[in-house]
Length: 157
Image (tube, rainbow, N blue to C red; front, side, top):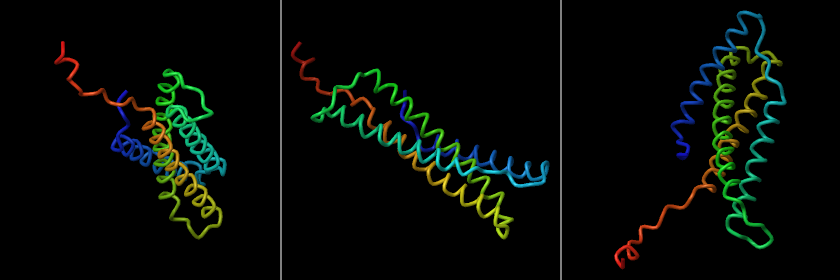
């Protein structure tokens, strides 16, 4: 696996932004009301980002061999890296989608319901960014150190 690039996450967020904006506008035209964003979305993203951050903290402690921790199986580290990549991509997708919805809803700012939707979306965007950061942090922890470039052993043969 190659490390996640910020440009990849930016592309995911951009595509999701376009999808969120188009979905919110289409929903407004077809159903004649605003796209509902539940308050559970920011809560879910907060739980995701907090759990991945705690997972990263525990994984780092086990990889460093801190006292009171058990050694970690390399397969668990590889699975953690895969989960970290999925988390950062999910955070980018959700964050981009929600920013698109926010932009689509800004026209109705004077309506209290729309302000609540925008507040929910803003919190979801913040916690999506936290999920991206936590995923990238866990991925960085799970990287395999580069091989040594010491050629002295080869020269002795």
